[in-house]
Amino acid sequence: MKNPSVKIKRANKFNARKVEYKGMVFHSKKEFERYLFLQNNEKQGIIKDLERQIEYELLPACQYFKAVKYIADFRYKWNNETVIEDVKGMRKGTAYSLFKIKQKLMFNKYKILVKEI
Image (cartoon, rainbow, N blue to C red; front, side):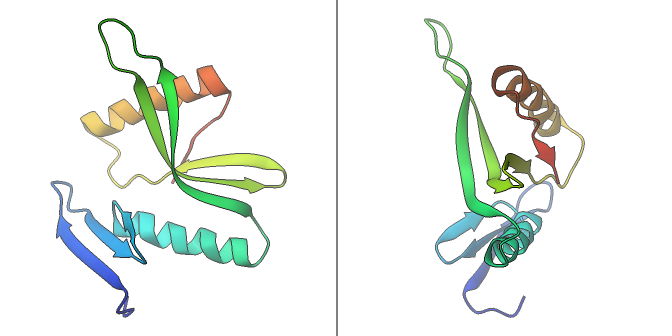
């Protein structure tokens, strides 16, 4: 990436580096590159209504617990269907296990299968 408007920040424990681009922060270079790909597809008319960081409530708050939420990396329309994507680098560990649970809860509550990239 040679674009001066792209800033790469320090790596996290999985060696993913946050990327800042036009005021948006991406959790990894892979997520940023996926955004550029989807943005290009939107410009070409392949997909439409591209959005980032969409929050879904999976379980409501109650007396003892906060609400359980899932934040999708991307949502867009393709062939009149809503597609939800989550970009994953490491497919192991606690964070990935939590994602898999939230993926199942998304399907159970909203009948949406989160696409793992």
